[in-house]
Length: 331
Length: 263
Image (cartoon, rainbow over all chains, first blue to last red; front, top):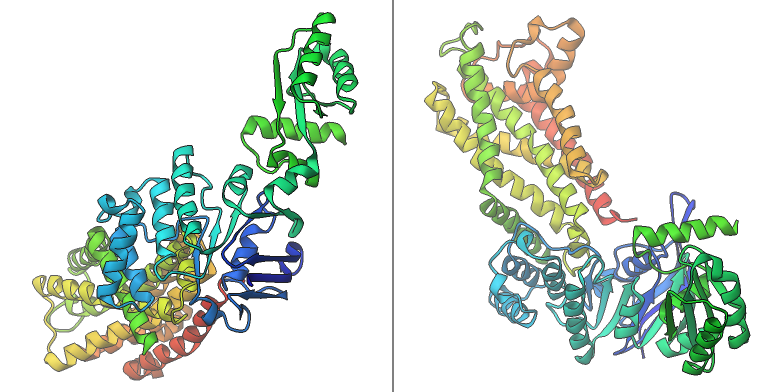
């Protein structure tokens, strides 16, 4: 059974000038995890907001837990949990205050709310900071509390909108293990992310979205197969680039590609380490000493790049600049 | 029934916020008390009111009304803050009455007004304010003030939902409330104003409120009444009508706007 169904969702802003969702369709099988993967502005948050009853689509249909989102939002709210991009908890109140308040809003009654709050605080390792205002929490702690707030009444379907955006690596790891724990408990989860690694780690299935529609979907492995096998990457000095490209193309039997900014020559190879050794030998014969050599398994990054023609995440300013220059050079 | 409990939980949250950040309560009280002292001692000596008890008797209703008028800014910026932090999304995704959040906030802000008015009343008493109309009328006067603040907090809800930056909301609200409270009979007689402003001041809800409170606190409403116009003859009734109009307009449009806040 499908726990989440979205069909042909369209959402435009500013009288149609901005098309956030462009006939987006997706579904999530009960008890599985679907990761909606896409760059900023692809429509991830808009989709989640529609499914979580916060936003009405211009057209299309959406069902969550078998209930029509547009016709019966109040019933959908009883079966979902939502944890957003920004920790949506009251900063001034303590973690304990927040969870008890949300428990009461779920009509658990004061006593049950307190019990549930304490249970969740314990489970998310927040008991020690329970009586401190949220504003003193670290980013990771806030997200965990926010997640706890969305789990007060065990939801059938959980929406997590970029649960680890802005967290440091440790916070992200902690969040991941919490989410993995939840998934084991059998919740149906729709998770959006711009981190390919995250989708890879947590999801049963991945839907790649860009410009408001799903451009590919499948398991992580299936998507990786779309880009082919391993990739040989070699960084050389500028004056050796031409020769290196020739060598790499010869050995791999494929056209080599060049990232000028990074002076990185790369090509898909089917023979793995053998190709690497051959290439190094040929380069050595030609008197070229590579600055860096690696053999890469395809990442979801590559999947995204090959599907959309642009990278999924802007990692650093530097990288973005290189990307920008590359784009300009193309034009 | 559910809607009522939901609302009360939200109101409780408002009050808990006050206990967690006592500064809010302290500063929302200090400011009006400071106004009482400044006006009482700076202008009090030079304005002749022609009534027993001196300027402070006329001043206190003015400052009460001004203070509750600023509820608008408080409600608006508090709500805008919640919107910005995404807290509203969380509330809206819960199976609760959708208007509980806004109603709860207006009630919470009114409760804050009770505390603020009480402190101001005490401060006024210390510097010589002596309402002469008996306990019942004074109580009605305060209820009237609370009701006015409540009506205005619905305007605040609308303002808070319309903009998303709390600081802008704060500034805009002040920009509206400041002239409104000064272009009135709250602090000085309107008779000294240019003719056009006099008309404005006469019909200004702040003036009718101030005049109504003065009446309820046992003063003759000579201060600022230019002519036998309807609002100055019937300040209680006019104020009441204003409040009903404000709520009749702003409650439905605010609730509607809240439900569609994200679209």
